[in-house]
Length: 536
Image (cartoon, rainbow, N blue to C red):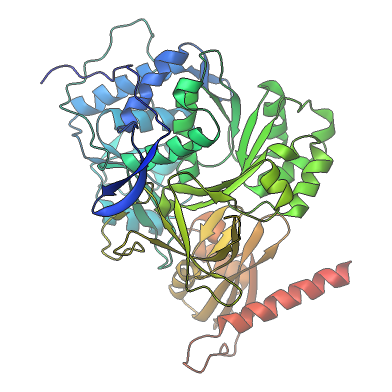
């Protein structure tokens, strides 16, 4: 086997779309397209010594990223990593996270994006499912790992760009339907599910977004490239989309040094002349409400992409007041991890004229509504080349025999093809952009001594969109503080309920004998609304 380097030769990124059979399914896809995510690393040569990753005092150039990723890949291969091996990345946003991701891809391994907020139980379940060949974890993640897990170095050397290139002795390249990454989703069963995304999936999603924004590689001049503020976790599908887009178009990724802080976000926007910001509405609202917003120069900010929730008229009004002129360049969309990310997009006039809409389908996406009601609402179905291969280790799939992904979300399409989301069929809680399965919280509560039964659901929150509420029947005098303390090692921090109702009597049930969660949720929301009314 000879030396393998990712060649910087151009790959066609076409605009023509045709029908193609993919894994036996008829899908719309670009006829000229890239087919290997590893090839995107070659774009680093195009951007050279420009800053690519910024966090605190650390700045990694594009050239430095490629050298570091190839050096780390060579190290991992020398230590026994083989093509196709699964490598769990467990850490918060950092230059090391990004370098380790590209190192895995370059070594032909499959990065598995662990949620750095997992509790020990969720981590143990995921390790048992995946049985990774290697775990790369930052200092916090490493403290949660069992002793018998194979752990590699998290730290990455950024070598001199002019030094000798590492020899990567690898055969062949990825096929576009090979697994490219595993991304976890909460699912509806409670435990995290590992969504297997192919190279085709990640690249098709990138291709569509670059196409509609006129940023295909052949359209991007070498002098261009924006500074973008990235405040979401890299281990979510939106983080991967941001990461591969940035290296392709030459963007600088600026990341906060730790937990999101609106004051730090304001400082970074001013310091780095941030042009683009991708965030959940909660983060944008907190920045606009911060006392320093009037004292910072935010005129560089030209585009905000909002994920995790539709752009409603109240949010646009807040933007008008806090960032005059930004409203026409607010973008949003709809997607899910099982679909490999975004399926629809809305921007510019769409968000202004149709606030609350999730936009129209991306170029290769087919949408339909299953069994619409008389009001045209029904379950949203998606078919496109970005969809997952499946859940790892799970036979059950939401993709039917005709290739339609059953999302579990409810909505309708208007006469002009715009999608409107009207509900979630499976009652997933979305807290500040994080998906929380009520069943997972109920399962954790069931393991606490003294808990008789529980019901978990989301209630409105003015900042986070929703927060987690638990109604729990207890014995032995357990309090809400006791329960929260018991849950913290078992659940991700955002999944621990912040509102509680402690009961001693059995919870109401439906005719079938199940706990009537709907009745409890209606009561709780009414009480909250009344409390707010009294406060006003």
